[in-house]
Image 1 (tube, helix red, strand yellow):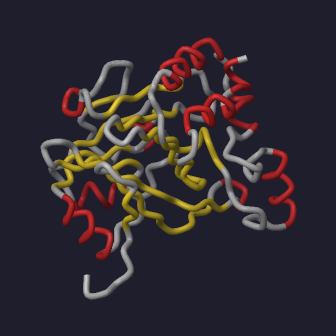
Image 2 (cartoon, one colour):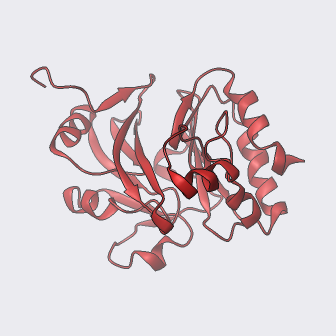
Length: 236
């Protein structure tokens, strides 16, 4: 890399993360982006929530192995998906609920359901968090590193990230709480809490040692207990 600053951060046991650019969503709220890279036992790579494709990121990813799977975790995290699919046309893309309708320009190879993905069964588990009107998120668990991976259901942005009225909304929405939390808008949007609790039980059964999320710092201390606290509002 000729002394260049690394784009990928090694989280251990064949999992890495890379922070991407800030993107602007509805009402002018801006969010950081993050992707995760998982290397399977056969050397193939799974790219979760691919962020902006750059020459440096591409070089570091390709140094790890062959890009074989592109994984958008919900119907909101797809901004850069087309760029990666064009760069790696042979990579398989799996669709979370609702994304096929939004991205008719992308040819998907399969859909996430309650069944495991055959190509990585035994290495990556997932749970589909159904019953939410905003989006249906697929939460992932990388067994070897003990890492649970969330997109929007857990967030923690630093104080000062938003300004003016957006800062007030973010605080009330729990986006800038003392530890990562489910924003209130997502809590209210769970109209079928029974379905969500079924998925949560699956998530809490994982032996989680770390939690990473698209919009917040990784949780590396007592991560399973953290998840119990973070989702107490739903479990109760």
